[in-house]
Image (cartoon, rainbow, N blue to C red; front, side, top):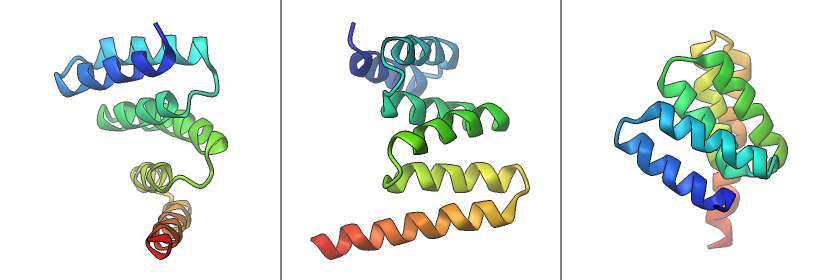
Length: 108
């Protein structure tokens, strides 16, 4: 199974409330391809949803290292940092997400 198929399946599992199954599939995806941005981002979101903020931050940090200009990962990191109580980091990522969003709007 390809990393992207695993991410797709994990997304379905997550929406069905099967968080452990989703995380197992995402772990498989990054074992197959350590540069699989969607897997790391999904992992950050699921860990965040579960209140596992340190693990969410770890996955989100890897994701942003793979795709620095993604609006969504900066939004995710902003939310994680807020939960961790670091307003400065949260604002930094929030501002980055807004700038990237504006750039996308200007392209259209």
